[in-house]
Length: 53
Image (cartoon, rainbow, N blue to C red; front, side, top):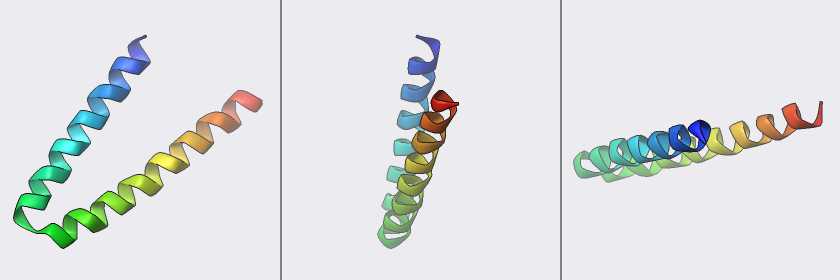
């Protein structure tokens, strides 16, 4: 339960940062969004590998 709340807070915080960057410079927000997407996928894959072990 606590992990779910922390994940939601993390996503909300990152979306707020991404929106703030987008207000200043849109291309930077697109690049940052792509990098954050890659990090999210890597974290998900790493969590799945921990469960397998």
